[in-house]
Image (cartoon, rainbow, N blue to C red; front, top):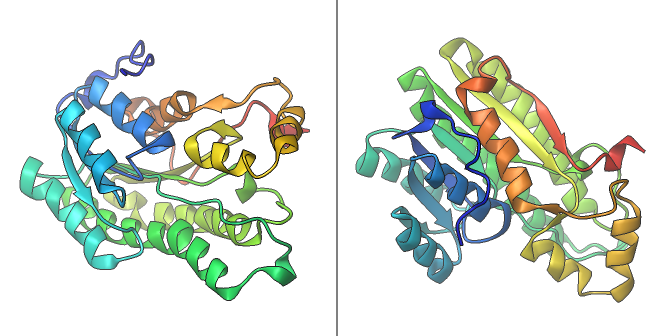
Amino acid sequence: MNSPFPAVSYADMQGKVALVTGAASGIGEACARQFAAQGCRLVLFDRNSDSVEALAVELGAHAIAGDVTEERAVADAVAACQTHFGGLDYAVNSAGVAGKPAALEDTTMEEWLRVTGINLTGIFLCLKHQLKVMKAAGSGAIVSISSGAGLIGTPYLAPYCASKHAVLGLTKTAAMEVAPSGVRVNAVLPGSTRTPMLEDSMRQGPELETMILNSIPCGRLGTADEIAAAVLWLCSAQASYVNGHSLVVDGATISR
């Protein structure tokens, strides 16, 4: 299914190279579709090999199956952008997990390391390798996906909340370090967005969706396409002076 969002056309994106992690579903997939609609050449990275390869075939992209917690896999994905397309202009670091709800004192070390490994270490590794290529080229834009939980407390999701807060610190630090080189680094903080990850969480209790909806002033979940539209704007030349920013896209949820 094609994205309904290419009503906005970014002429500067035509022919540019974009890397999207977590591209097989949810926000990552929506970003991949919208970049493709703008005429970008794509490298799609996800640990779900079947889904990411199917999407790559559909979009005429290059697929890489791998885990963002493994540095060699991340380095290979960035290298693939150079090998197949000659460079890297945009990167979206979207791979993430919510984790299993538990009180902090009941959270296992295994779960802590799993969630922070994907949500935080994974983005650190992506930034590390993406920035090397972009700094050498003297241009580029990176958007990492954090969460509204990166700004407020989230009971029973301590690893998720901590990792999403930390992504904002990484984003600001990276932006300050590379701004003189012409590279921009920003973050998008989605609110409750209808994605497979959220739907999996809501299946853990029928009352959870009602509770989530009641917390959103506009009365509905966001869509992956709405988040992706913000990501593309941040990557585009229209956002050329936006750097180190954390853009909340949440229907006014954390404004309450």
